[in-house]
Length: 220
Image (tube, rainbow, N blue to C red; front, side, top):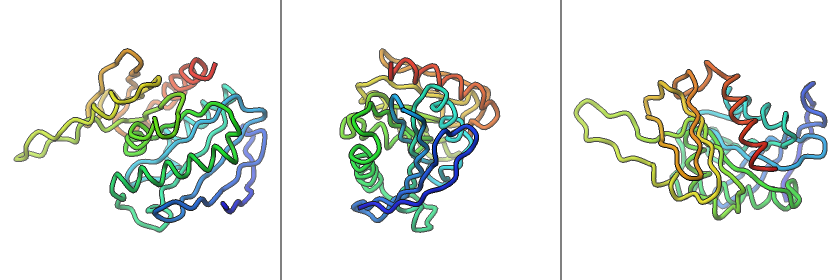
Protein backbone atom coordinates (compact mmCIF):
# COMPACT_ATOMS: atom_id res chain seq x y z
CA UNK A 1 0.00 0.00 0.00
CA UNK A 2 1.30 3.49 -0.77
CA UNK A 3 2.13 5.86 2.04
CA UNK A 4 0.60 9.34 1.77
CA UNK A 5 1.59 12.69 3.26
CA UNK A 6 -0.79 15.65 3.04
CA UNK A 7 0.63 19.00 2.01
CA UNK A 8 -0.74 22.51 1.74
CA UNK A 9 -2.46 23.96 -1.29
CA UNK A 10 -1.56 26.99 -3.38
CA UNK A 11 -4.12 29.63 -4.42
CA UNK A 12 -4.43 27.90 -7.81
CA UNK A 13 -5.18 24.50 -6.29
CA UNK A 14 -8.70 23.98 -5.01
CA UNK A 15 -7.82 21.03 -2.77
CA UNK A 16 -4.75 19.92 -0.84
CA UNK A 17 -1.85 18.28 -2.61
CA UNK A 18 -0.28 15.11 -1.29
CA UNK A 19 2.90 13.09 -1.67
CA UNK A 20 2.55 9.33 -2.08
CA UNK A 21 5.24 6.69 -1.92
CA UNK A 22 4.56 3.84 -4.35
CA UNK A 23 6.47 0.56 -4.37
CA UNK A 24 7.81 -0.53 -7.76
CA UNK A 25 9.94 -3.48 -8.92
CA UNK A 26 12.99 -1.21 -8.60
CA UNK A 27 12.35 0.55 -5.31
CA UNK A 28 9.92 3.20 -4.09
CA UNK A 29 8.81 5.99 -6.38
CA UNK A 30 7.43 9.28 -5.08
CA UNK A 31 4.29 10.84 -6.53
CA UNK A 32 3.28 14.47 -6.01
CA UNK A 33 -0.50 14.55 -6.47
CA UNK A 34 -2.05 17.91 -7.40
CA UNK A 35 -5.84 17.47 -7.61
CA UNK A 36 -8.51 19.84 -8.81
CA UNK A 37 -12.15 20.04 -7.78
CA UNK A 38 -14.08 17.40 -9.74
CA UNK A 39 -11.31 16.60 -12.27
CA UNK A 40 -12.38 15.62 -15.77
CA UNK A 41 -9.18 13.62 -16.36
CA UNK A 42 -5.65 13.14 -14.97
CA UNK A 43 -2.20 13.96 -16.33
CA UNK A 44 0.77 11.92 -15.04
CA UNK A 45 4.21 13.36 -15.80
CA UNK A 46 7.79 12.16 -15.33
CA UNK A 47 10.97 14.20 -14.97
CA UNK A 48 14.13 14.44 -17.07
CA UNK A 49 17.20 12.24 -16.63
CA UNK A 50 19.09 14.48 -14.21
CA UNK A 51 16.29 16.73 -13.01
CA UNK A 52 13.24 16.57 -10.82
CA UNK A 53 9.55 17.36 -10.76
CA UNK A 54 10.19 21.03 -9.95
CA UNK A 55 11.43 21.73 -13.51
CA UNK A 56 9.79 24.89 -14.79
CA UNK A 57 8.14 23.28 -17.80
CA UNK A 58 6.62 20.56 -15.61
CA UNK A 59 5.24 23.25 -13.28
CA UNK A 60 3.87 25.07 -16.34
CA UNK A 61 2.23 21.84 -17.50
CA UNK A 62 0.63 21.39 -14.09
CA UNK A 63 -0.73 24.92 -14.18
CA UNK A 64 -2.07 24.50 -17.72
CA UNK A 65 -3.78 21.23 -16.80
CA UNK A 66 -5.52 22.81 -13.84
CA UNK A 67 -6.95 25.57 -16.03
CA UNK A 68 -8.87 22.92 -17.99
CA UNK A 69 -9.93 20.85 -15.00
CA UNK A 70 -7.30 18.12 -15.21
CA UNK A 71 -5.60 16.79 -12.09
CA UNK A 72 -1.85 16.23 -12.18
CA UNK A 73 0.51 13.67 -10.66
CA UNK A 74 4.27 14.29 -10.91
CA UNK A 75 6.35 11.13 -10.57
CA UNK A 76 9.89 10.84 -9.17
CA UNK A 77 11.58 7.69 -10.41
CA UNK A 78 13.11 5.34 -7.80
CA UNK A 79 16.69 6.31 -8.69
CA UNK A 80 15.91 9.94 -7.85
CA UNK A 81 14.13 8.98 -4.63
CA UNK A 82 17.28 7.05 -3.68
CA UNK A 83 19.37 10.20 -4.21
CA UNK A 84 21.06 9.21 -7.48
CA UNK A 85 21.33 11.59 -10.44
CA UNK A 86 22.35 9.04 -13.07
CA UNK A 87 19.22 7.43 -14.56
CA UNK A 88 18.44 3.76 -14.33
CA UNK A 89 18.36 1.60 -17.50
CA UNK A 90 15.35 2.10 -19.75
CA UNK A 91 13.74 -1.22 -18.83
CA UNK A 92 13.85 -0.28 -15.13
CA UNK A 93 12.45 3.20 -15.78
CA UNK A 94 9.62 1.71 -17.83
CA UNK A 95 8.76 -0.97 -15.27
CA UNK A 96 8.72 1.52 -12.40
CA UNK A 97 6.57 3.94 -14.41
CA UNK A 98 4.00 1.29 -15.30
CA UNK A 99 3.80 0.21 -11.65
CA UNK A 100 3.14 3.79 -10.55
CA UNK A 101 0.49 4.42 -13.20
CA UNK A 102 -1.24 1.15 -12.33
CA UNK A 103 -1.38 2.15 -8.66
CA UNK A 104 -2.70 5.62 -9.51
CA UNK A 105 -5.44 4.14 -11.69
CA UNK A 106 -6.73 2.21 -8.71
CA UNK A 107 -6.40 4.94 -6.10
CA UNK A 108 -6.44 8.42 -7.67
CA UNK A 109 -7.64 8.36 -11.27
CA UNK A 110 -10.79 6.37 -10.40
CA UNK A 111 -11.96 5.54 -13.91
CA UNK A 112 -11.22 8.89 -15.53
CA UNK A 113 -9.21 9.33 -18.72
CA UNK A 114 -5.46 9.33 -18.20
CA UNK A 115 -2.87 11.27 -20.18
CA UNK A 116 0.79 10.46 -19.59
CA UNK A 117 3.97 12.32 -20.43
CA UNK A 118 7.08 14.01 -19.14
CA UNK A 119 10.07 16.07 -20.05
CA UNK A 120 13.03 14.69 -22.03
CA UNK A 121 13.80 11.20 -20.65
CA UNK A 122 10.40 11.15 -18.96
CA UNK A 123 8.74 11.77 -22.32
CA UNK A 124 10.56 8.76 -23.78
CA UNK A 125 9.36 6.55 -20.93
CA UNK A 126 5.77 7.72 -21.44
CA UNK A 127 5.96 6.97 -25.17
CA UNK A 128 7.46 3.51 -24.74
CA UNK A 129 4.81 2.52 -22.21
CA UNK A 130 1.75 4.32 -23.62
CA UNK A 131 0.05 1.05 -24.62
CA UNK A 132 0.85 -0.64 -21.29
CA UNK A 133 -0.65 2.29 -19.36
CA UNK A 134 -3.71 2.54 -21.64
CA UNK A 135 -3.10 6.26 -22.06
CA UNK A 136 -5.57 8.53 -23.82
CA UNK A 137 -2.73 10.78 -24.98
CA UNK A 138 0.97 11.50 -24.50
CA UNK A 139 2.50 14.89 -23.68
CA UNK A 140 6.19 15.24 -24.57
CA UNK A 141 8.14 18.22 -23.27
CA UNK A 142 11.54 18.64 -24.96
CA UNK A 143 11.62 15.16 -26.50
CA UNK A 144 15.34 14.30 -26.97
CA UNK A 145 15.09 13.27 -30.61
CA UNK A 146 18.79 12.80 -31.28
CA UNK A 147 21.72 13.43 -28.89
CA UNK A 148 24.07 16.21 -30.10
CA UNK A 149 26.84 14.78 -32.25
CA UNK A 150 30.32 14.67 -30.74
CA UNK A 151 33.14 16.13 -32.82
CA UNK A 152 34.77 12.83 -33.71
CA UNK A 153 31.86 10.48 -33.14
CA UNK A 154 29.31 8.95 -35.50
CA UNK A 155 25.86 10.40 -36.02
CA UNK A 156 23.78 9.40 -32.95
CA UNK A 157 20.74 7.26 -33.58
CA UNK A 158 17.33 8.93 -33.74
CA UNK A 159 14.62 8.12 -31.18
CA UNK A 160 11.82 8.95 -33.61
CA UNK A 161 10.66 5.32 -33.54
CA UNK A 162 9.58 5.80 -29.92
CA UNK A 163 7.27 8.62 -30.97
CA UNK A 164 6.05 6.83 -34.09
CA UNK A 165 5.06 3.77 -32.05
CA UNK A 166 2.48 5.76 -30.05
CA UNK A 167 -1.04 5.20 -31.39
CA UNK A 168 -2.90 7.83 -29.34
CA UNK A 169 -2.74 11.63 -29.76
CA UNK A 170 0.66 13.14 -28.97
CA UNK A 171 1.71 16.72 -28.28
CA UNK A 172 5.40 17.58 -28.51
CA UNK A 173 6.40 20.98 -27.12
CA UNK A 174 9.92 21.65 -28.32
CA UNK A 175 12.34 24.54 -28.05
CA UNK A 176 13.24 26.02 -31.44
CA UNK A 177 16.89 26.04 -30.31
CA UNK A 178 16.89 22.54 -28.81
CA UNK A 179 20.25 20.86 -29.60
CA UNK A 180 18.46 17.50 -29.58
CA UNK A 181 16.49 18.54 -32.67
CA UNK A 182 12.80 18.90 -33.41
CA UNK A 183 10.60 15.88 -34.16
CA UNK A 184 8.34 16.06 -37.22
CA UNK A 185 4.58 16.25 -36.89
CA UNK A 186 2.54 13.17 -37.77
CA UNK A 187 -1.04 12.04 -38.35
CA UNK A 188 -1.78 11.97 -34.61
CA UNK A 189 1.23 14.02 -33.44
CA UNK A 190 1.21 17.79 -33.07
CA UNK A 191 4.53 19.60 -32.66
CA UNK A 192 4.63 23.11 -31.18
CA UNK A 193 7.90 25.05 -31.30
CA UNK A 194 8.50 27.70 -28.65
CA UNK A 195 11.29 30.24 -28.30
CA UNK A 196 13.54 28.21 -26.02
CA UNK A 197 16.28 25.61 -25.79
CA UNK A 198 15.99 22.12 -24.27
CA UNK A 199 14.99 23.57 -20.89
CA UNK A 200 11.86 25.26 -22.33
CA UNK A 201 12.18 27.82 -19.54
CA UNK A 202 12.30 31.05 -21.58
CA UNK A 203 8.75 31.02 -22.98
CA UNK A 204 6.65 29.29 -20.36
CA UNK A 205 3.51 31.15 -21.37
CA UNK A 206 3.70 29.56 -24.81
CA UNK A 207 4.27 26.18 -23.15
CA UNK A 208 1.18 26.63 -20.97
CA UNK A 209 -0.95 27.78 -23.91
CA UNK A 210 0.01 24.81 -26.09
CA UNK A 211 -0.62 22.28 -23.35
CA UNK A 212 -3.92 23.77 -22.21
CA UNK A 213 -5.42 23.84 -25.69
CA UNK A 214 -4.30 20.31 -26.54
CA UNK A 215 -5.45 18.81 -23.24
CA UNK A 216 -8.86 20.41 -23.62
CA UNK A 217 -9.31 18.59 -26.92
CA UNK A 218 -7.87 15.25 -25.79
CA UNK A 219 -10.05 14.89 -22.70
CA UNK A 220 -13.21 16.36 -24.22
